[in-house]
Length: 333
Image (cartoon, rainbow, N blue to C red; front, side):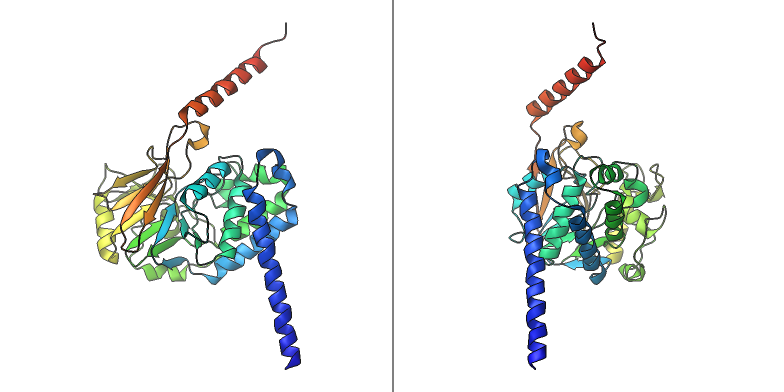
């Protein structure tokens, strides 16, 4: 008996130690500034965070079942300062429940901070933070669009590989209160029974065709009715009738997806039976789009919190960048 009690006490101390460490990760990232971003972590901490996130994903299904209320966020793409602003405006976990729809990395300059904060929150508050997989949570994509170079430049290839191990186990979709289906990309003609997702074997990469490809790559297209091949080269495009039939087949009422920049942060399709959410304002510093968070209340009434970019500051930043580029291009006299 005494031995069992000692083991239990040791396990409790170890658990509290891990919780304390995870909270320190969150606290350090909340105090983040670009100037001292490399002083926050040693690489082995981030690798451990990836391993713990992977174990969390392993314990959950490919299709998550959530209950409202919940706040839904679209693409973040390495825009860490904007993620902090989003959480400050909408409420920090665990006071608020969040579902993120993928594409945490690439494009923006601080993908490591974005995914590390969300991993830490997810492990600390597993009933308050849920992360789906986007098409950029895949080695062939994030090798090309910035994340690989960010990891290699700031740490090493080992950290990049650790993140891939977690990405390849992430869930692909979520159903809220049995009526709202959420994914990164879009619906699939091949998904005729949601129980098919129970047969997805992880870890897995994202193929170019099939259910997994569509859930992470597909786009709506108002010019067609059914499904067609996508110009992206992966997944398919789908029309209004395809959305209506999909919802009817699965006894659902709404599709919520991300994956595309929409200027107001959200955009409806198919008589408001589908909505696209994008949560990275001034995307890549080159667009004037707003960001949005979708709020689903306990009665499944949906509303949106919109964050509009400061166009004056963006314009000044762009002018400074242009002036700097011109100065560097001017030959010495």
